[in-house]
Image (cartoon, rainbow over all chains, first blue to last red; front, side):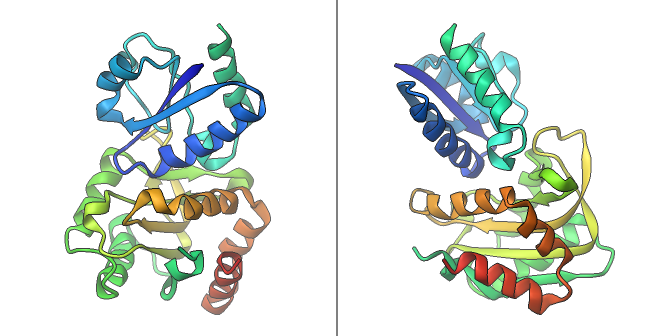
Length: 96
Length: 156
């Protein structure tokens, strides 16, 4: 079971968009995945509690908030532009 | 939740004047306020949020869209307000707040219960990825055509 933490500004709009898309794609690819969503400000706490394999923010997230967990920018899930590349990057991280 | 119910004719605008970001946001939030969809606090919440976490996104075809939104506590009833901006208005990018883009379409999302509205978010994402329709919205001849395109899209 792989764990992905999707985060965004404050109202969960774009992180909801991104996690729906990501869950669909990763499940289709046969990856057993659990997703959680939170606000940027909650990332340091969530990284400790949820222990994700990768953090996917929809906007700029300070790397130090992720406490060493790999960060892959997920704005592409909102725009659809460059989505394949981001998915490939996330899968790369999950397979490591 | 029927998607169409979130899109009201009175919340659709075609703006020609050269406006600043805050003027355009005011036009949209005023329409939401007078329709009883949001609280007084919504306007400031949107402005603050836009400064901290900007919402412009670059789509394919060189079109940029902004999707201003904020926490549900500022919302009374869910609705979406839309403005086509003829000359474009500057917004900062979600991906890189250092970069400013000219936005021709603003979709202001006021959601009361996020969990029940995943459908509308998915519909919006599909819209962003429909390059032809996005182009038609940005280039619509007049407000009537704009309304018709929006209504047809969300009517399904």
